[in-house]
Length: 212
Image (spheres, rainbow, N blue to C red):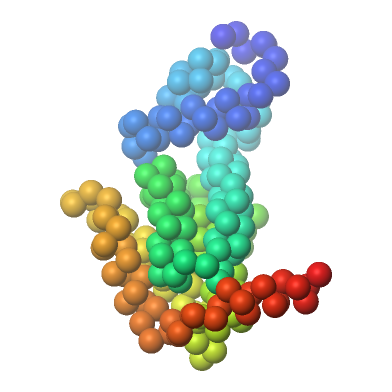
């Protein structure tokens, strides 16, 4: 496609192409030329919309990290239902998709990308930071409902849980973990912090009525 052709959705077109290249060819195969070729556009399209390739990658990762808000809302809304371990395991499975893990690896391996991200995010690590915030919001709800111990240090617990699960998912020798392995990690981190939850739904309903 000629460089001068106007593409109203060029940003998303390039993002989707980058995701396909990353999923298929991995971090080492992700180049600006590979992205524009995959998108079917001239290389100049990339340069017209982004300062450089690291700027493009930073915007891609920030955009995809922001999309975790839907998963965060669903997890927060699950407070008081099901089990704490099951809710956390399901949510973290949604966070650590193969594509998300590839993006985390991308951040780790590209100095220029990390520098770009630091310009907008200070020390926060994309995807990992969103996952930790999601778990923090959920555990805070469950703590208020009495299903997580009042003594639980949630600001410390959340990144510990997310980091442990991230390490489990990056064990490529045995593939991605099965549900049993994931539940085991969550149970281990949450050991002695999950309390009797038989009355949690009723207490949650009471809290919601007070909010109204």
